Length: 638
Ligand code: FES
Image (cartoon, rainbow, N blue to C red; front, top):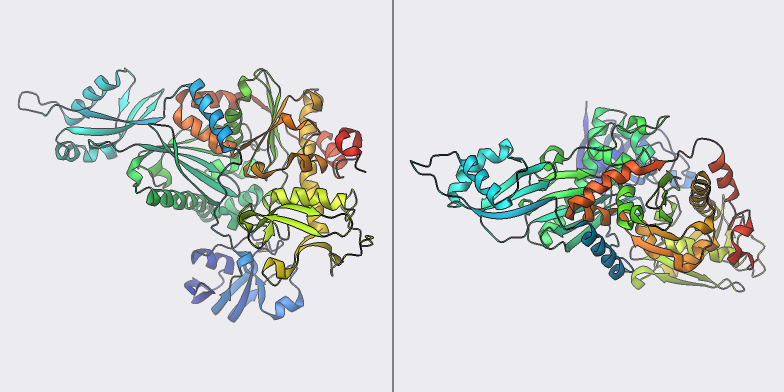
């Protein structure tokens, strides 16, 4: 097949691809990642590019306007290379390798909690390093190298657990022992099932590290943890590169199961994401992959399966069955992660297709399985997982809230990063707007907490009604409320304030999306309560997790009906609970064993069975709810 050159601007990146390759794919091959919310179905419009010159064939143009088409704007997923091309990828179509906000608003408190849990479970990392000295062989003491090493190791470890060594380490062992003059540092796994030698090197005092990794559908976060002290030495986060195959787990499954190549590609995307983060950390800390002995990964069921290259097809088909709930540890070499090649990667066990290891990890970090109080743990993210219970029982569900609160599916939505509007104030009379922007710079978009705030304020100012309909006849006659060709919108920041050429707006469509997302979460909470015949006020503590949880305003969240109307002091934020649980397991064998019990103990409630969830959902499609008596603190504001 004929090959052509595609030049991507403004990067000036040139790549040669076969005729008929989609521009989305060509860009990815050139290392430019384009958003593809619908997974390349041609329906979302997120993958827009401009064909500046050359020949390309478009099969679908989605909702592009005639004006856009005449300017050369195309959907990159449905535009195919037919000759040499020059293509511009605008900033809004790119998956930015942005910095994920990693600091918790209440970091001090959370570190406290995790330390307490570590004391409770006992400090016993899944891998460690020991320094030993072996006796040199002589003509009269001619035991083999591995025998000498294992005898000495067993003596130092004082344990009769089995001790093994993989072939790859054996292969270089003789030279290493002699170069080190029999003075050695040995890195090994320390699991209930036994020890495995991961690496042998000349004796040194270098610390040995592990990684706690949260593989989120949208964001991936890696913590570098010192296995001797338990300290978090460094953190790094970025977008999950799998986002080029769709925003949600369903579109990624659809993409992955289409062909073996797709499966390999999507697995590589997430492994690459983690590797880039690891490399960044290693470089900053002047370390090499040889220093990293272990990793614990927490992700939802689809993410875990895709990470390990396990076919996820049946996760999305009724009756929704994952391939495994508990995966054996695999070596870094097997999946291509940049750790010690023989280091073991432990994947958090999951409960069901839509309640995965990230939630088990989070539940472990909340310590709810040891609590007398009834705790509600909510992960406010794309999948909207909820766990309810205490030390005697635990039930869980997933209410698929969608990516709204992470900025997905919202015109100017973005993650909480510099330039994101995080607080909104609207004067109810004049409709003047005051904004608080992350990083105190000109606003470029609006993040989850800003959206929650915005929704509450739009309703309070009478800009929208309780169903989210825009009131164009608002008494203020403000120019901020306006109708466009196909929607209505409210201007949050004028173009000149935003330092760009576009006004930052929230549209009626955005509002409806947000109402659906908050409605799904609230309906999930109510449905779960119903299955155990409890009332909302019987919840003693609400723990909110997810990157978004850090910035959430409880008052606003109650006002829009996202969270139950309970006293402020019952709410607690845990931030990225998934990565916290991963760290806990990394540092404590007992915690890791408990995670397996926890996953088994959680009963999964399938919300698609019966009508409870649907009925609850429909009732929650109002601000704050159809039944105002559920929100007594808000009721008075009407
Ligand atoms: S329209 Fe191209 S990815 Fe959605």
